[in-house]
Length: 192
Image (cartoon, rainbow, N blue to C red; front, side, top):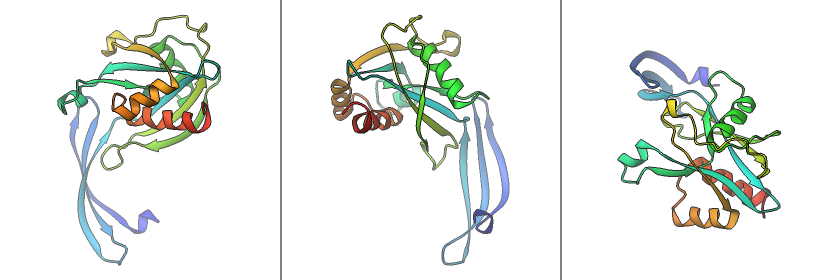
C-alpha cells in the first residue's frame, strides 16, 4: 500500500498562476525496506478529455491544428496536429468532451465511447486524460469550430483520410502523444 511507503514532510507552492506548481519533500520506502528522502515538483493543471472523431464509411478522421508555445520553445514550429481536447472544468469527461469537440471542430456528436484513460506525463504532471472516440457525420456540423478566441484558441480543423493521418504520424508531422495513441487505437479497432 502507498501509505506504508510514503511519508510526506513538506509541500511548498512554487507557482499558482496559470496552474499550480508544487514541490513536495517526502520519504520513500524502497523495495529493500530502506527509507530515502526525495523531492518532486508536480504541476497540477486539472484532468482532461480528448476525442478522435472518425467516419467509418469514408475512412476519415477529424483533427485540429493549433499553436502550442511549449513545443515552439523546444524548436518545433509550434503548430501541432491533435485530437480535440480540453480540461474538464468541473464537468464529467463525457459532458465536457462533447462541448469541447463542438467548440474546436464545429461537429455536434451524440454518443461518445470512452476507450481508456492515462497519465500523459506522470513524472511531473498530475493530469489524468480520458480518451474517447465517436463517429461523426459530415452533415452534423452546425458550426465552423476554431475554438474560443477569449481563451486564446485559434484552431484549424482538418479532415484527413486514416491513411494520410497514419503517414503523417510516421513522418513526424503528427507529434502529439494523445493523438498518436488514438490514431493507433483507430487503426487497430475502428478503421482497419
